[in-house]
Amino acid sequence: MINYKEKITTDRELNPSKDIDTTVESDRGRIFSSAAFRRLQKRTQVFALELNASIRSRLTHSLEVAQNARYIARTILDELNKNDLKTYGLENMENAFISTSEMTSLIHDIGNPPFGHFAEDTINKWLTINVLPKLASFQATTQETKDLKNLLAKDICNYDGNAQAIRIITKLQRLNLSYFQIISVVKYTRGAFEDKPTPEDNLNYLKKKPGFYFSEKDFVEKIQQTLNIKAGHRFPITYIMEAADDISYLTADLEDSVEKRILSLDEVYTIIKTECQKQKEEFLLKILEKQYEKAKKDEEPYQFNMFFTFLRVTLVTNFVKHVSNVFVQNHQAIFEGRFNHALLEYDKQSEYYKALKVLQDISAKYIYQNREVQTLELQAYTIINSLFNIYKPLLDLGANDFAKLLKDEKIDCFISKRLIKRVSSKQIVAYKNDIEKLDKDNIEQSDILEFYYRTRLIIDYISGMTDDFALEEYQVLSALK
Image (tube, rainbow, N blue to C red; front, side):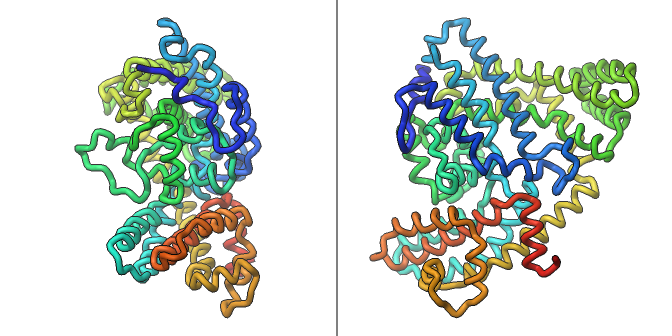
């Protein structure tokens, strides 16, 4: 039975409201007012350190995703209303359903590091080389402690923007969002400490990437239990956010590439047309030719805007209808969170999926492999690696010395005394709160977990930087400025 009143509730960690609409508006206000959301304006979408404000940042991308999500949610409600929304426990819940879809989309990228997804791989490589050997050196005389070490070794080298988002929401920013708003951001349902799923796993798509860390495991499980969400399963509205994100990429990167003069309008048209013909994709080709012909009739400066505006509008309208139909047709499985597909990739024979693949292939070939983009990625690699190397002395300290450091007591490592002053106080408080919960009588496990949380502290600080701040910090601390 589908009853959204069981999942969209007023539960939150502190000061819950008794009214669902008040709860939703509170979440909206907290999200819009958060520093983590504002930082998206200076985070890379594709082009790092971009000065041209017309090019998409993580913030403008998230705004587009949020609008797509509103559109999808409204379309789904219109379809469900044909059977009466009471059937699904959605009467008087329309605002909550739409707003949660929108807000989830607005913050889905707040855990992404500076310089985009390339930085995720860079962070994980550095952690594998520099942190795993240190973690392995800790004493473990019991099987329980050995298992903990192995679990944390997997977790700490699995940095992912999706998992980091949950950490930011719950511990670093303490947004105190409602439980359903938090869990809707968990796009992937596997803990970073868990093994990758096998092909036989019925939830293998939902678990393909980490969705939360060991450090937030207990809180995620608490929300799942409160909202009756099984382990490894999704919150239903998360499917809407994912589809909205996929739709936002249809033309965005191509549009930015023309703005950046990597490609011309005519080149984009020719490339898409050629790829459509190659893959025998007629749906996209028909839309393309119609909008290109229309745009070419306009004056030269406006052809670019005319073409992409109408191409985007036509594609979004069609794709929203498609994913909304998939949602409604698979409603029970989606509500339970066991639907093991992205809405847009469910029917791989559909004209919509084929059009998506055409545009994805073009972006991969002509944009992501562009020399300028790859040069920026190499620069990002140098900056991120250098920052972690600079802050590594904080990880080389023993637990006792680090504790003294936080109390501003004297220790031998004079570099660490200066480095710790640069780390955010909010991130230090999150570390302290985790340390206070440790069982000090179990010395082996306490030492291992302290090091784990200290590593998280350094990851939080560097991954939380904006592009320009990371560059500035790198230049200053490398004596390049």
